[in-house]
Length: 276
Image (cartoon, rainbow, N blue to C red):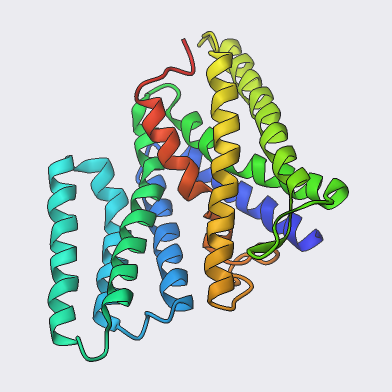
């Protein structure tokens, strides 16, 4: 537990620094590094790194997409994505005896989906010149607060197993506590942000109904993301995706829920205003 807490403190400290410097290229670099880490863990644990050319294309795509999302148009992103897929398929022709189609599809799908999900945080930052940084913070908070609440409620009150075949330690009580507790903490988080901004001369009203909806839906998506990652680990007979974060595992172990929450946040923030 102590190791887990200390790692979280270090991670939060680095995250705060990145958010503070997010008006520069720092956020793009951070998202790029994290995405490459996620892709590396997926390819490594699913035994795909042996296909070196295809892995290299996956890493290039993951590393470049945050910068393309920030500085380029959608057309450029579409063309770049198509070229990467073309390179993967061309390599498949030359290495068809070593690489089967299932592995190829996994490498393409996991790289594109994970990279695009992570890049949603770049989009969130660029949505609003005043609140953009907080949009990124609230995206991470919505995923992680739910995870944290579920962990503690499940540890102390959990009795009924949620999905024992996928994740034996997760309980129904923990899931409910995560969704409800995460929503309440998120609501308090937003209120504190409002007070800080009002003190600094940026007063605004909060759409409380929207905040509650975001918290509840994000909590559910967080559980789905966590269970999806657990299923991948179980089918590949691994405990964690990596060891880079002591007490937490790999990058994907920490960002599995974010991969599901970030696209939801980016999509809905385009159409609904949290602050008026």
